[in-house]
Image 1 (cartoon, rainbow, N blue to C red):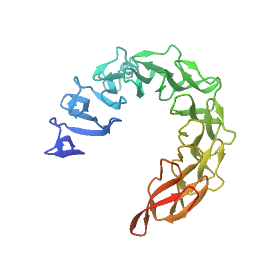
Image 2: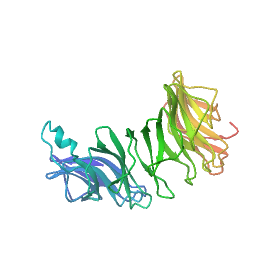
Image 3: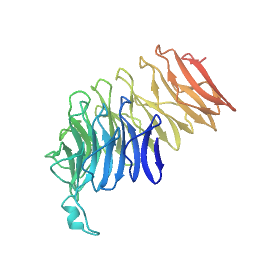
Image 4: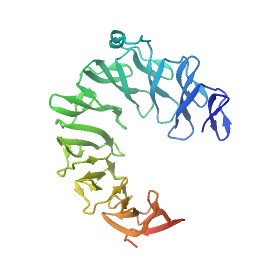
Amino acid sequence: AITMADDEWTTLVDGVAWEQTFEYVWNLRFGQSGKVIAAQVKGDEGYGICLDGKTWEPSFLQIRDYVLCPDGTRAAGSAQVKELAEGDIFGFLEGVWTVAVDGQTWDRNFLNVWGLDFSQDGKKVAAEVRLESTVYTVAVDGKPWESVYGCVWEPCFHPKNGSVLAPAKTDSGWILVCDGKDLWGRGFGQLWRPIFSSDGTRIAAVVSPKFGRWTMAVDGKAWNRTFGDAVADPVFSPDGKRVAAIVKDKNRWTIGVDGIHWSETFDMVWTPLFSPDGKRVVAKVERNGKYALALDGKVVGKEYDGMYDPVIGPEGDRVLVKALEGAKYCRRVVMMGGS
């Protein structure tokens, strides 16, 4: 927990405070293993990142955001490294932002830096950067790609081969770029949130085939069905063969699976969950103020006054529902057959 006493801020871990105190502490995060705890901090000398009570040296004028490597032992943040006088647009155009990794900055500065990501082995860092007012690209370990774009979204490392992917804006629309080259060979009106299957062999992303319509593209091929309001992040089945997503059309929510949406619609739906064999899909849904479990598009079991995310059993034959019935919390096991 982040705590404050006598106008000094710090972090308590299981009731034991970090030795250092700060002017402010925020953005508390755990490493994936749960063994490392990090936070953004502001001290007398400026801003930095603190990992398990040890703060970066030196500090910086600003730290806008930060990420942890997969094992949590390293951190990278977007850092302002040059002071600017008020209204100094020429100084800004020379570049005052860069990436700091474990407190050490890249050799090059940029107009802006966003969307940082670590490679799976924690050795490399990628970020979207702005080189000029309307010129964007991706930089890896401080070196920008040779290809530049009208805009880019957050880059991400491939989980297996270490290549870097990012959506990028070109004259032909938004494309998915891999290490500076067009990966899918086609453009969209918009493209974002590329997600990998667990084995890294497939990629899905939210795309807009035409203005005002949204859908999912898997390995560059878009679903035939489009939606007018929204499409959320793709979810792969454990074997990577199927893709599901929350979709919204005409102000009604449902789930799309492999390009086919459930016929029933709801006031709200939550992230879909595949069974271990990838054949069944469940989701928490809400309709008329009541919550329920939907299995392959049909509501099964009881309706509840409140409900947590469902959990599918390891054998894939039952679902654990944690819910609120009136003033009582309960757990119910729903068989995949619907009983």
